[in-house]
Length: 292
Image (cartoon, rainbow, N blue to C red; front, side):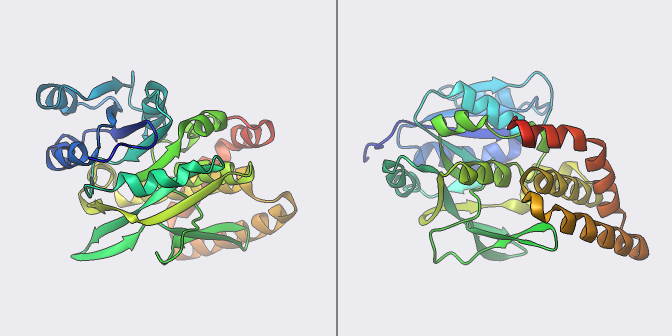
């Protein structure tokens, strides 16, 4: 076993993921290379904690006081960690045995904040290669999608499978809890790091298997709820990061998209916008005072 070149903690955010922990936690331990493992439990009610305590007593467990969401659970896990690097792995992730070392080599550059894994995602019976993202501003919105995995640059590092430098994480204030319960929080912290001059990377040599379709979100939320939350958080991200000179373009195209949604009776976008609008003062306060 090759010794890690940095001290490492693996943080597993969990909410009612007992069955996923049964399937994948042993593989995480086998690939940990001696790293500390922290289960950051988001107030589960499915015996996740007792299962881990009984079967994996060396794993450290921290539990939030109430169910809040992904960002809160991850922040709690990072706060517990004392290592130079924290690696985030979702409960539906199964890493290859040597996935850590390719990630860690990049942190010899002190400007590197985060490095993402090659995510072999199981989707409708096929394996889709994910982990590298591309993003751009168009018609007042931030468009993001899966990028080809033959490059090392990325628009964000996934909170489901990536390594982060803890000192910079703390400097940034961690993930913004406004994005709870899920989505866009990892894109946001990546963007904040980039805005401060830090680097984020993707390494296709660090391979994990992602059984996304068996994740907890799809089993606990309806598709309409998921879409509404995604649209709401998209507005949060745009309002936090859009160049001010481009904001009028955002307002114009938001109006167009609202009219189109009304015409097509697509309620998710409208509901997401209304929910975001109710919290707009909080979002702009975060933006202009650099608070999360």
